[in-house]
Length: 547
Ligand code: 16G
Ligand code: ZN
Image 1 (cartoon, rainbow, N blue to C red):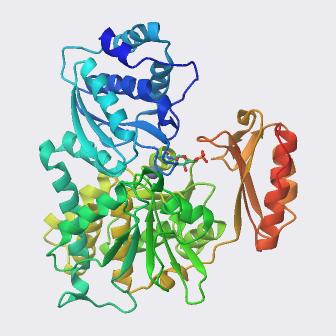
Image 2: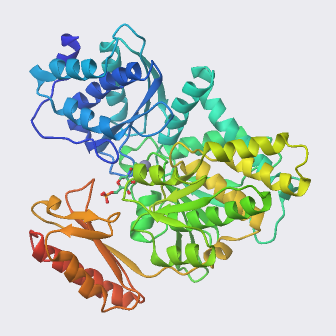
Image 3: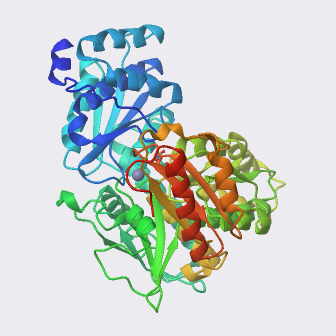
């Protein structure tokens, strides 16, 4: 094995950490990290009774020169938190100490090296991804594991493949087919009641949307989906844009969900048609946001908060109609717009929980409900269903005394469960979920938007010497360090009607993030600036104070 290790040496002593989205940095710094993660994935497979483990090469919405790697656990979920620390330790071990560190991990986990190990490798469309996938495969093989290269896939596809491989007898060659046919079939069944002569009829719903693929794997994913839905009773009218995978610099460039959300602009690459839905995904298609441009050329964003409220309000109707005793809750982060939270709790009467930033925190919290809907404002989210929910649905079909009026809703709930990729946020599955709900409601995107008005909000970055001087509590909503900062923020917030602000160190960039919202544009600009200046003063700001 030493010969392989020597082919992927650690070239500098820059510390790299397995963060909320795995390891992420410049692609040129990652070869040894990815190779070592190939080894760790094979080790983890053995620790989990030879179950398949996923290894995804992607830097998601980040620029093309970046890349990253993350591991996927046997049920398609993110790597267990305790193993993040092991991953960091192995990635940073000096070359001569790597084998020793690895032996320690193997020993403390009782690994039997004679057992088979299986690792699924997937990658996004970055120019460095193929090379890094090869490094991962070399790592798996160096540790005598079997690597299955799934090539270009979206992150949620790989999560789902891992889940399917470990819970069914689906052969590796059929995983893709299984994923897309499940989406196509369940979507078709959900839409069928509204189709007449191949045309959709339900009030304001129009079967036409523009898909912004961010020039990444999302574009490949949607094209595959469209080929699977060909010939179905109902074909979703999707026009795919930003699908150029051959020009690396185009990835996420002036398009994709992050661009649209942060710039509050439609994606470049095509001219939006007034009133028509635009669906933007990110570079690995685990995030999705909707938007449209109105007849006066104003831009409207429907972010993760809006998707969450749409989904939760529809699912709660299904639960009520079904008569099943299931509790439904929604999980947001501190970034969720205050008016969305108000709408969910006061109008929809659905309980809302707040989790720390990072998908794994939301996912974990959502598991506390029978039906847990979670979304980050950036468009990453899904719905998880408890075993109790799944069992009650199955039992209802076996119960001969169940009346048809209830069964009708239970069937729809089951079809929703089939459409949703519960392992992780999935832009394509989430998009189909939104479409199925808009169609069932007979809504245009404007109808959807009328649910509530977003409070004006601002995000700011503050550069400081050490961002970890900021510590947060209460799911990022308050900061406990440095002393006095929270008190200052409280005083500033109190000056503005409906004001709210919080600060937290970024997990992916060397900055402190400031979030503010208030009743008016003018107020929010002032509040964000005052809080940013206070952070700069009290937390060791570098450079000129933010303005
Ligand atoms: C990562 C997280 C995302 C979070 C973002 C926050 C995952 C898969 N991704 O991209 O959920 O919103 O980090 O970034 O967990 P920040 O810490 O730089 O604000
Ligand atoms: Zn992503």
